[in-house]
Image (tube, rainbow, N blue to C red; front, side, top):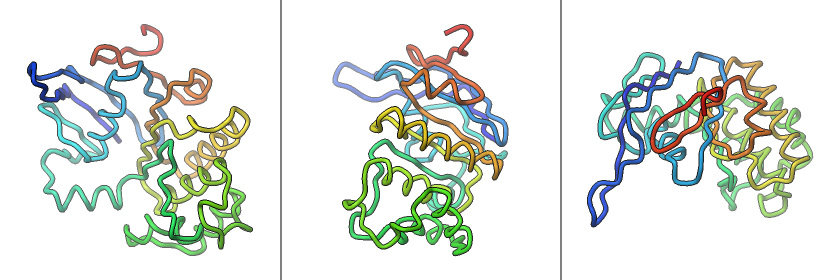
Length: 222
């Protein structure tokens, strides 16, 4: 599903290029889940942004379902972000002017995959059935993150990219949200790449790797 090959990324500074990723190799099979760990500044979010097509690498390849992201035009990348992936963030990033129902439908409508029956099932499974007419500011943090999960999954993407999706939640709420996410992903054979600082959260995923000084280490050797 996802193949990252010899990926390099640096950022310009007054002192010269600052290397962030230095020859990353990573494989993730369809339906698998992987936790990407590492200290702040180790390049975790940079790698996630590259896979999402939000930034471009200096060299190397990112293949998703056999397609090289570097070979796509800006228009094709935009279509990839709409239809190929679901994004989940720590800060929810819900649209404050839209009710819960419309936030849930937002990504699926962009992808041309809005399915009212699937959205209704998601809302029920996520415990949002009685909250559909509320606005994000009227929800708790845990409820907002459930909406964010539903929005990411409503279009049935093949790949979900999650950046600290439970980082702002208390432990109990984090466990509940993670349970729902993993359950829904497993049922739909969706692939998950998650950035997390939490060993407890990472242990729930099938595989763990650590980014250190721009290089990847498997959990057993990190």
